[in-house]
Amino acid sequence: MKPPTSSSPGGVVDLHRARRAKRLDLYRSRQADRVRTVRATLETLTQSGTLFTKEGTRRGLSLLKALQLLQRIGARLEEASGDGVLPAPRRPERMDALYVEVDELFERADKLAGRDEASVARLPGH
Image (cartoon, rainbow, N blue to C red; front, side, top):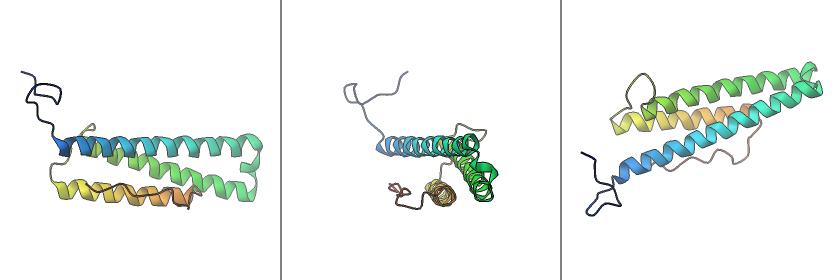
């Protein structure tokens, strides 16, 4: 038996679930965008030869650390969605803790990648 949807007569939409899915989509989109940007910057540093200078090496290491943090974000998002080995957390406190951690990881990654401006706007909590 199929659960009712908003398009079926008398269907009920779980707004909490819809908000949670939207929030995960926003985080995933942000993470994918950051990974593309960091990889492109690393590629530019390598192709231009700048990576092999003292300052370029420093910048490259910073970008690699940012990439590691972005990978951790991906793992946390996988955990939050239940797509990984473990099911998604059921307690709202655990989900909130995951989102706080993801926000902090984004902040750290953005600083390392040189995105100190207002690119880390926190997503709404509810």
